[in-house]
Image (tube, rainbow, N blue to C red; front, side):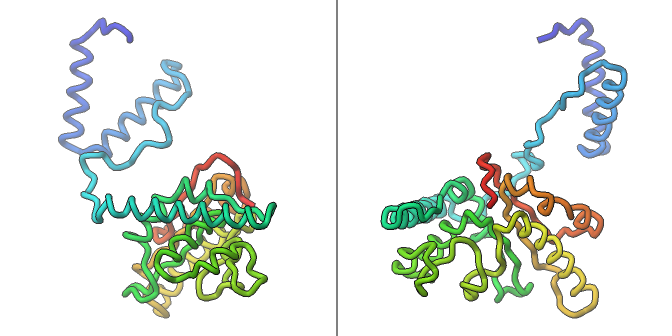
Length: 262
């Protein structure tokens, strides 16, 4: 650590920061620090490496609200769902070698899905008319396992995972034509899920603006793998979301680091 050769000056700078925070709040303080950083870089006082990581929580721990559910119970249910998903895939592969299927996507995002199901997603019977959700395709084993725990799917159906041609199986990925009562939208199509989600969010705004349907409280969710973001379709229309101020659209990027998008 560098030695402070002028502690008086240092204290004056810190007191100035405290004064800005007290008088104008953290947003103004962030802006001033950002301007100082840019000025320092222009004068080669500091390098061009970022001074913060991109993965910093935007909500301070002290500002977080109490968790609304029973965290212990939800964790137990999540563990059961994750286990059921693993067993479903393993049983299928043991009976039919090479059939495929994996659990790493859901295993890495199980908490995200469980919290979303329990506290964020709105069903079609909600006052807002319900949300639209594009699930990450490789997470389908976990979604099936959760539906099984809810009594919506049978053991026989789980035993026919990826064997939908039998008439009683489960499609490999979200497929509303094969399973119209289960899936809303198809995914695992080279990044077309995120692209469709953007246009759905825009269409919802159109319906509301025209007075055709009140979609003001509904949300569009797109669960995206990090591999999907390599596809131009995934992020190519984000400018539309920004330009149209689509605050009804939420992208959840699962950074699994396996590049599994197909």
